[in-house]
Image 1 (tube, rainbow, N blue to C red):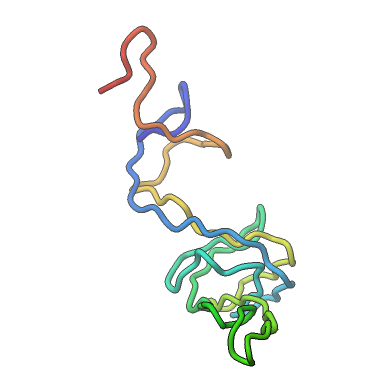
Image 2 (cartoon, one colour):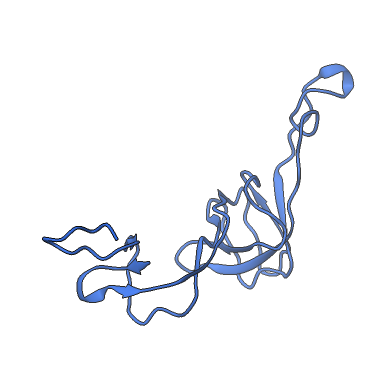
Amino acid sequence: MYIGSGANMEKVRIATIGTAGVTTLSADAKKGDKTVAVAAAQGFQAGQIILIGGEKYTIASIQAVPRRGFGGFGGFGGRGGQQQPVEPDKITLTEGLKAPVASGEYLSGTGVTLGAPLTKNHGAGDAFTATVATPGRSNIQ
């Protein structure tokens, strides 16, 4: 795999591909909080490394994620099929937050982990490609 283009292109090895969960905080979280309220916890799992916040993000690890099914919160069932009250999803972290995070900020999976540190600077949106373009020749290998 390659990242970047032109003189800024470098070859990389993907070590792992994380889950792609993404949500937003549904309430402010204070420094030291181990539980954060989120818009939706689907797509996240215990043991997953996540990023919380915007440009000044915090790296955290998930200890527990709520599991919901039919007849649970917000589902039909129990109480004669009546709609149950919906409680906000909360993700429990292994350690307290190192900084406060405002409601509406993103919480996301880590995505792709590379096998070694990058040697060049890359901006947001730099593409990963499987082959290097070779003008005038076939790119099929």
